Length: 229
View: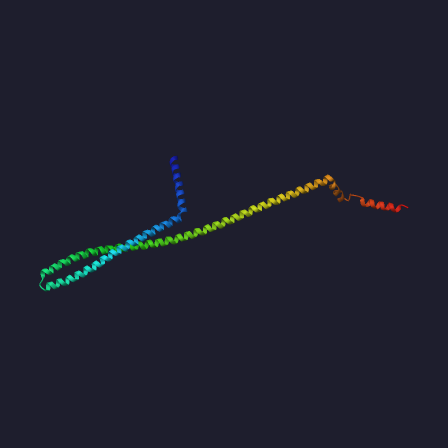
């Protein structure tokens, strides 16, 4: 595969991914619109079915009328023939033939209308079922998406709390470290000051029992007082 074809395929794949991402992000909105379109088409189909049924009903009434006319003319033709009016009876027969021809045509049309009605009813019923199923699935998807968004929000909030607590703990530890460092500085400064004034030396001598003889000197002076006349 040439470099150009590879780049073309890569660009095409990237464009497809972008398109799918956009479609997925708007999936529920697109599905809602598709359902509205399907319901509009279903409403038109119902109107067409109603019109078809009306036309078939008109044909049924016409068929009933033709049958009644044929039955009536048959009775009249028989009566005319019984009266010896053969020519009149033939005219009646011709009229009946024309009516029967019209009846056959109307019967054929009515049968076709009934077949179309049955197919349209089946299509409408099937479409209604598919729309109802799709609506339930969309409701389920929408509810799931709402739950997942809530879970994501809780997780994000919990993560934020943990992050905030972690930051606060780290700040507290840094503060403790600074305070310990400051205490050490104070202790070092005090030690240097004691070394400078000799206090540190006195403390070390006192610890060894070597210190100020002020108390012993006072006893010596008291003894001298007592020896004087």
